[in-house]
Length: 323
Image (cartoon, rainbow, N blue to C red; front, side, top):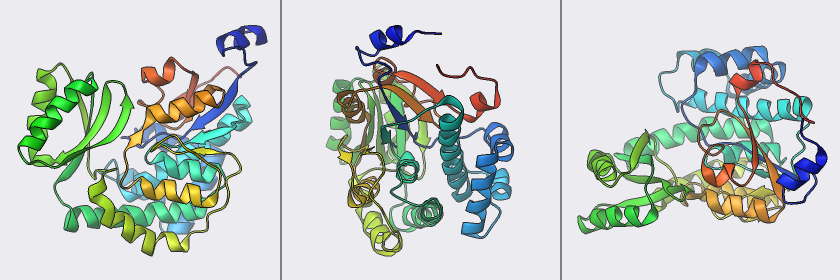
């Protein structure tokens, strides 16, 4: 076990450092693990029951039968898993964050955890958003995907982007994860070409998200959601500051968190900006609450923080307690 002096040395002289909590963006889940956690963990089970009452159907049953990684019920289940893991971190590991962040889908978890949005409202929002997005990307903006890729420096991405522009192809960066890790939204008809160009330049294509996210082209969806969904929500000033995933700004008001969630439709995630803000705020310990293989692992995160990635698999296994 590390001494307090050793911890202070590792955290730049700040004894124990300041703790931040991150709710990760959503990716494919392993149902055998997440499903087991939802049934076994008492907090998760209670929250899952509340979520089912809120939407009027058995979320777990639909999640079990879901064939899509991003179905409505999968999104609700992911929200529940992340928030229950955050509670587990508090009660079991003694985590007491002074800052909160939630890139991409994680923004909903951050809004709830910070106290800016009630859990029931977040569940209703997640449910209805899934339906709005499905309709929008089927009827009004079809054929767009968001593709993630690594080992691609910005200069290389700019070269490939220039080729897309020269051919008249719309495209936008949707996420900036690390110095050589991005997500790009583009027409699915050009995805194969894009992947080949990445490989030719030494890049590594990863996975494709459908529905897509975080691009100015989706402004009509943002406006519709604000007009028809957000008017029903009550936001409060957060109890702990929320770091916006678009620019690293610190949101301490209800309107600030509300705006962050809406901006997520049309502005890219810029994770380095979040990291910079957390560092300036003295954060040295970072708890990532939720299934994650991205934000907790990239060098921008691991070289700046002591990271505790708390996922369902790790919670279901014995873990040492924190000092």
